[in-house]
Amino acid sequence: MTFRTVISVTLVAIAAACGGKADSANTKGAATAAKTTPDSAAGAVATEGAGSATADTTHGALPANHNGKIPVLEYHVIGGEKNGMYSRTAASFKADLEDVYKRGYRPITIAQMLDKNFADVPAGMSPVVFVFDDASPEQFRYVENNGQLAIDPTSGMGIWQDFAKTHPGWKNRATFCMLNGGAAGHNFFGDATKFEGQKKEWRFQKVKWLADQGFELCDHTLWHMQLSKYPDAAVQEQIARNQMGIDSAVPGYKIRTLALPYGLWPKNRELAWKGSWTDPKTGQAHPYNFEAVLEVSGGPTKSPYDPAFNPHSITRIEAIGSDISKTLDALDKNKTRFVK
Ligand SMILES: [Zn+2]
Image (tube, rainbow, N blue to C red; front, side, top):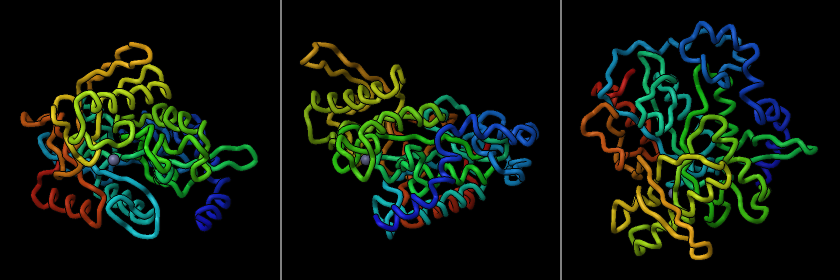
């Protein structure tokens, strides 16, 4: 904690430059370079300060393979001293970003994958989906200095933003599967109290910021229920109340993806993507209907062009040890990687 706090304070000035209004701030200076690169036309975020952001085409030499597989990477806590089942150190997270970038992967969301929208991936390159589960402050933390709010550069989102600044074509595309009633700060990256210095009122602000940036918001239940152990009514309440929470932060947001806590299916499988909960206090029904359900593991997922693609069972690769790089090695070796 102490170490982290010191770093935060030192780097707050840097973070202030990239944190708050990344999109508008970053368009200047990048415009000329952006014209020449097919990958940077829409999301100007990635090109700020990158005077060398000429063309993001150096890695895009692979032949198209639209039936190839897509790696969907699964992260939990970003930080800590060493890697674990549910945590990835900042250094390892940075190394993962560098690794996928060098191999010619560019990020998209699950929603984009469903839509077969690969506009953010240059031809000859491959899509990768980063999914962040559980909405911990370690993924997205604010720091405050003299009333100025900035993204903590040591949090997952701070690392992501710094990476985007120096890596042309790296856009704000990832999927956040959030809890809004989890313990220990797993409540829209904070808590109802002042958890790890994160203020209660910052929670909705963060969720809204993510949506505004182009990140995808995903349902991960209210408090990470083991859906396999509960009756149908409880399952639907957990899922619907998380959707309501997201709607409170971003009114009208259409959630398309759910991540199963622990990868556990409800007894009635369909309730993972379709159901309804009626609030006994108001008598109002809260239906939900998602297109995608994310499993916890299972390797790279099938292409949406593959007739066998099942959006209700999208497999993922957990960010554990060197599982990600091994999987990417295998995709290259077997030439089974999706290439635009
Ligand atoms: Zn989870």
